[in-house]
Length: 208
Figure 1 (cartoon, rainbow, N blue to C red):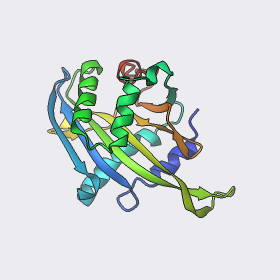
Figure 2: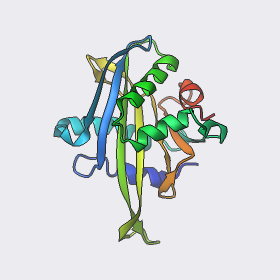
Figure 3: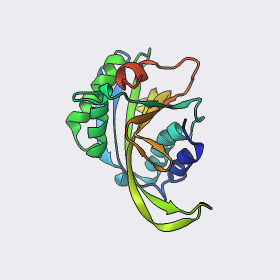
Figure 4: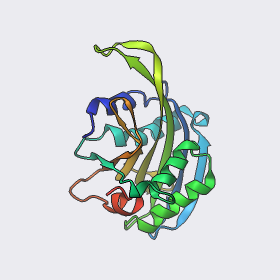
């Protein structure tokens, strides 16, 4: 189960003034899953307005209804082996989105399995959060014990020319549990849990 407070701790920092996001990358896809264009840039180089808009997309995933729209899945030991989707996600996280070949591999994976009837975008964000030590009363004690490095992926229908709409699904990897990284878990977002994009869990992430 996902602890709501863990997610709120992440989302409280998702403002232009407080964010520690390092990079944003993504692609635009047609309805058949063919890549129509890509981008990859330092998040700090964005204008204030662009930061605000993109943070809103990223925040949708962890700020969604915990354990309803956002559910945690565990990767089996078999699903974490060489050549696995877990290994690909880990490599993307570890390089901070800077390896274009890895990003292209991920986009092609999404394009192969994601099912939709319209053009869409895949946005990926990287963050390194210096998790502060807190006392039992939740007061910050100062120094941190861990840097939580993670990625957020948001899959969005296109609302116009290269303009992403509200995310319909996505994920946070690795999951954030008890204020620490949970490397063998992923938090998966489905905007409409009654009509989920199950291909995200089954084929793209292989976490079920």
